[in-house]
Image (tube, rainbow, N blue to C red; front, side):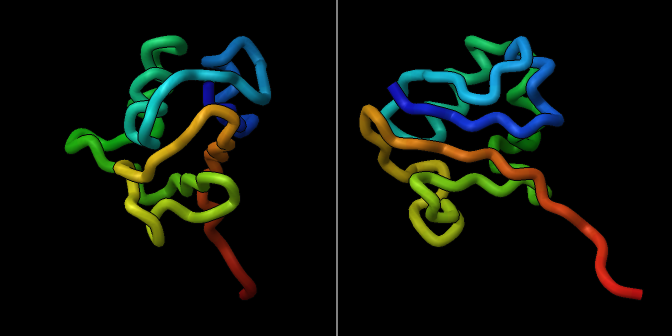
Length: 92
């Protein structure tokens, strides 16, 4: 099982759980399993083409999947995935 850290903005889908465990051998499979276990969370993470939404950052063991193999990044039991919504803004 892979541990997925859920941001506060999406915890309503996971019954307020900060960390959930789901199975999968790639990040994409883990996100699909997350949607199966917690319906409604998937569209908040993936766009209509199946890619990660541009305002969502996905980290696998503290590495940004954009610099790995994206949704094809391999995972193993005990790995950690963190879902981090992008934050916009800056100095004026």
